[in-house]
Amino acid sequence: MKNTANKVVLVGAGAVGTSFLYSAINQGIADEYVLIDAFVDAAEGNALDLADTAAVIPVPFTSIKAGNYQDCQDADVLVITAGRPRKPGESRLDMVADNAKIMKSIALEVKASGFKGISVIASNPVDVMTLVYQEVTGFDPHKVVGSGTTLDSARLRRLIGEKLEVAPVDVETFLIGEHGDSSVPVWSQATILGQPLSRYLESNKITQQELDETRNQAITMAHRIIELKRATFYGIGACLTRIVKAILDDERVTLMVGAKLSGEYQNNNLYIGVPAIISAQGWESIVQWDLTLEEQAQFNQSCATLNESIQKVRQVIK
Ligand code: NAD
Image (cartoon, rainbow, N blue to C red; front, side):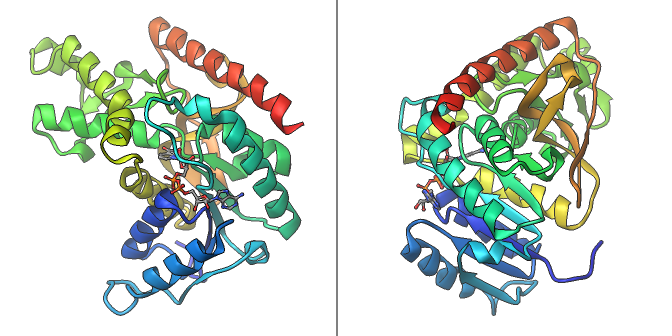
């Protein structure tokens, strides 16, 4: 654990960004927070509102304020949640052109600031936006982390936990691949209360059909929440806190983040949700599971879906 002051800068003080900050502040993960937003009033208003927590939270921070890109210079972690929210009925990949332009402009500002820390990207479509940001900044790919399938996997763990009446923390089930409709459940690596999932299937505690239903529910959860209240933000806020805490505390924990593939899982040169070890260096390495042939084929399909969007983005950002 590092003892020096930790500084976190947020770019995009909207629903996702401020949910992340609210969660981070309540867990006391950093000392200083800075909010940057194209809409300056949003950054200032949210900084003041969040500052009001100082006297009543368990672990106080030293400062929270609205700022600008110069604040990135000595920051440890930068979290980017800027972009436009998803409209009802729209897929994450439909937002690609609009958000790629926003991400390019932010990446150029961050690069010019002299930032040397770890960047965590959540703006959608997150896998493509993480690649845009890393390519435009030219930062070491290990120091750029996408939120990947952290949220998707958290949803799956909760849903299976509810079905089996097991705490989600004891449900080790994962979605990898695109953060979105083509994400892939890795049943072959799943454990419940430390037991292989296959034992639960053999003893009929859960059926394959029920597992497939929970996978579909996890994948469509965002659509349902967006229909009901226009946006999703608390779940991703907590997931971003988990990732940033792992970085600041140099945890070396495995999370389902967006990491850049160089041959792992048979694919190359794209950010996508995979198990990766998170430390103060960003994502240190990708954990290589033995996927079944079916899981690998589904993962390849998810990569192909993302590669189509990456081609579109190349036109937008060149
Ligand atoms: P929001 O509209 O509430 O907030 C976005 C903020 O970004 C706004 O305050 C806006 O002013 C700001 N912004 C826009 N352009 C900017 C720029 N160039 N520089 C600085 N700030 C800028 O939207 P939201 O609900 O907070 O969603 C933010 C992003 O997070 C979206 O892309 C959304 O799809 C994504 N998201 C990701 C996940 C995930 O799992 N990765 C989950 C939910 C939402």
